[in-house]
Structure formats: C-alpha cells, structure tokens
Image (cartoon, rainbow, N blue to C red; front, side, top):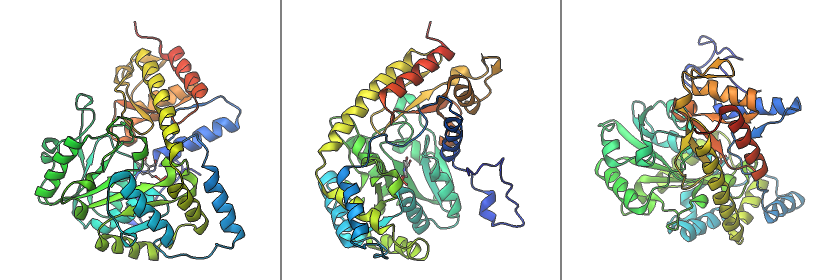
Length: 408
Ligand SMILES: Cc1ncc(COP(=O)(O)O)c(C=O)c1O
C-alpha cells in the first residue's frame, strides 16, 4: 500500500510526534498509481520513475546465486563484509581519487539508508541544513526526522539550477550545520565543474559547514570533464560524508546496497545507529554488489552513451511541445521541465491549478506518468525520466504532444 495523507489518518494522540511533520514519498505514490493502471490493462508511458531499465549485470546475479548455494546467508559485519568495503575503498580511489580506508566505509540498505544514518549522525536539534532547490524528495524529510531544520536555497534555470557561495550565504547563519549537495542532481541533472566546487568547498571551510555529498548518479555525468567529488578538495575530506550506491550505477535498485565514506568518527556514529536498527544489509546482496563494483566497468560506458542518446531525444521532444521548456541536463537520467505556462490554462475542460493537476491530466488523459515538481520543491516544474526504453519514451512524447500541442 502506498502511504498518502488521504488513505491513512495519522492521529497525533496515538502516534509519535514526527508523524505530523513528515510528508509521504511522492515517488512511491506515483509508483503505486502506475501499477494499478497497468493491472487494469491501460497503456502507461512511464516517464516518472527513477529506476534504470537496464538489467543487473549477469556476474552480479551469479554471485548472489553462488552466495545462496554457499550458505552465505548469516549475519555479516554490521558495516558490511570487509572485501566489499575494500572494493568500495578501491573504487573511490579509482573513480574519484578519494582516499578512504575500509574502516571509514559503512555499507547500508541502499543510498537512502546511508543518507539517513549520515543525517542522524550529524544533525543536532535546532541545526539548520542547507538544501539546494530542486532537491531529492527525501532530504527535507530525513532532516526533519532528525530534529533539524531544512533551509531551502533556491536556484534558477539561468544559473543551471546550481548553488553558489553567494546563494548559500543568503541562507547561512550561526545555526547552519550542513549542506546537502547532490550531483548529478535529481531532478535537475545539474553537475558542478571543478571551479564551482572549489568555490563551494572554500565557503564550507570558512563557515565550518559539513557536507553530505550524494553521488548516487556519479557514474552518469556526461561532460568530458566527468565527475568530481567535493570531498576531493583540500580540507574537505574531514568535513564531508560521501554517499553512493549500486542502485543507479549498476541497475540494482532492488538489491538495496548503498554506502558512505566519512571520517572515522562519523562512520562510527552511523554504524552505532545501524547496529541498533537494521544490522548489516543482506549478505547475498553484498556479494552481488562486490562483484559489480570490482569487476570490469566497461558496461557503464555503454549505458552512459545510451542515456546521452535518450537525453538528447527527450530534450528535443520536450522543447517542441507547447508550454514546455527545459535545460539540457548534464547527468543522472531526468529532464527538469518548466511547465509553468500551463498554470491557469484549460486542458480537456480542466483548469490546471498546479503541477500535481497537470501531472494528473497527463496520466489520465494521455497515459503519460511524470512526477510533479512539488515534491522536489518546485510549483513550476515536472520531472521526466529517460531511464526508460526509447519506444516507450517516444510513445510518451507523442502522447504529450497530442494533448498539449506543438509550439506555434
Ligand atoms: C539523489 C538520490 N539519492 C539517493 C537515492 C537513494 O538511492 P537508493 O535506491 O540506493 O536508496 C536516490 C534514489 O532515487 C536519489 O535519487
């Protein structure tokens, strides 16, 4: 069942106080609506979800099967098996030039869990956390759960939806504890270059601000400069928690393996929390992740090129449609579409009051599932995903074109 404010009533007197503060995950809601449409046999073009359509690498699947047959099915180290942490340590060096030892790495139940542990380990009541807008849906909710205050930092299309020290400074005060930087960004696809990161790093050092660097899409940064982690700048390793996962990189979302790399003190705090909540992530999934991370990485190049090809088609298609506009994303697999033109206009007899309503009309009348920007902090945008095979994407574009029309 999907949790929504409309299908459960959270009684303040009977439940914990945080139940009043957190919003349900909009992505989970869309997923369940789409599933119900598909069960009814309706055609749905799934441009809404953040799930790669490529299969998990065969070698990772084989490792998991072998782990089961070898009875590798008991508890493991809470932080994850040592060979996996060693492989992650090696991969961080190989891919990002980062030096983290296996003792500074904690393997968790997906990137989301690693983020949760990191936020809980760093945030104290009353702390303020800088969250650039648009943001991934779970950041503010996790911060609120930890008793800290999300402070949103707006960005503009003209600035590539990126924050700068100037933008951050406007929202920073003595309570500012942490910046959550996600790049390549979900939903905007923004990727920071080295110069921009050096400036952000200097700002965080001067103001004594921690950084959680969510790098779950790092393998899918498209520019020739590739991806740079903010942790690689001088003085940043000691104030950064790097978060990554096998989920998006290797098409392993359901396996639930993510990880963090952080100074030992922070990793120990995260481990403390994990030891009393989930313990280790699945032993079988850890074996699969190990094989994915340490094996040859050539497939990633092929997948990256496929994403680039799809991105270009989707961007071109979106820009043709009446009332839609977007930047060309530099990474991840989403297009952040400004659809504000449609607010107050009428479509199929319905006045569009919000992005949620526009997304609803697109789903009901055109069979196109997209995410309204609301959960990502925008009342003007839709998020379209290109982690979907070309024919489905093209079908979705044609259906949107038929409903909304072409630019005049
Ligand atoms: C920016 C970002 N961070 C973290 C996650 C969580 O990834 P995982 O599936 O590994 O928990 C996601 C998943 O959509 C994401 O988009």
